[in-house]
Length: 146
Image 1 (cartoon, rainbow, N blue to C red):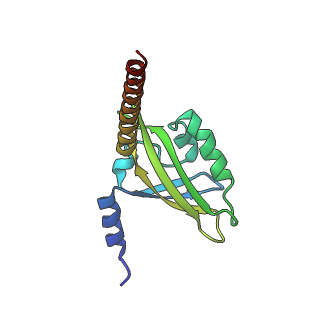
Image 2 (cartoon, rainbow, N blue to C red; image 1 turned 90 degrees about the vertical axis):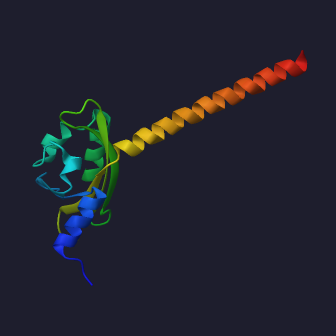
């Protein structure tokens, strides 16, 4: 049984997913779905959106978007952006696909800041554990040679 528009909207809300359509020729973008992931970010044009994106990620995003065509219709990127009223960069993961015969890229976006924070925490914990292990090895080796 096909899902209704309301069921899709509800599924996006539950999953905290926002949807978007980007006109690759004009740069006009329309957002729908979970507005929590779009808190105050520019919603009408990619030029306005680029102003909020981390400089290192903006160039990559522009390059990836420029390379989309009928032979390469998929778009997948994680990037950092400023969210008004928030002190730190937020991470977003977006995926899209070019609609055949058009220059319209349809996609979804998700705020993955919490996941990135957890990954960084675990990386730091692992580095601490490995440093401790190396210190124990060095201590053990020194005790063996004394």
